[in-house]
Image 1 (cartoon, rainbow, N blue to C red):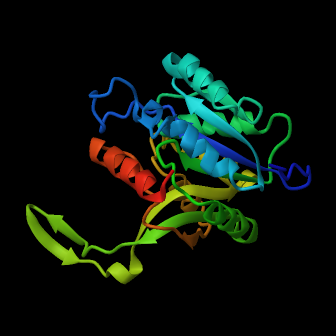
Image 2 (tube, rainbow, N blue to C red):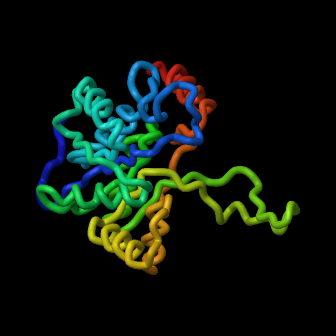
Length: 241
């Protein structure tokens, strides 16, 4: 695959893969991003999803220190060593992303970064490209799917109010940002003592900057529980992959 490596407008993928997967449980003996998904680890499939977009020149992955050797082995086995670099993750997702942003400046700062969940292996290349283009236009963009359930706020064990679902979306990844904007957003959060944000678009909103919404498919699932992993395997089986 010929990649767009033009120095004027590089795009770098940043994959948060340092989580312990505590919600998944210990049943399969490894964090969910290392589990097998139809012959390849979840992490490899998520990295390939970004690299399938020709605009993405390289990918950096934040991995917990105790899993760096395992991650290095599976990246090499997948033939991705030339385009994927591993970075030791931090104690929180926010710290891991901040470390990825620092590493992304070497050898030169990118124009746009894509921040993606290691456990979200099904995002299509055209959606990745749409997020990049939206970030280039407006500075920040998230992939999001419409909320189909009725959603309500509750208080004290009782419904408080039903929210208008036409105004709601389920935020997915990747999230795309101009590099200088997301770097500044993380620096401001650190200065303000905000240390455990689980979503990068929230940090950009704190700066008063708007975030564009790119419609994402319902199949862009995040593997969070064992049931999600079974669903992912079914999706691949139905697609013949």
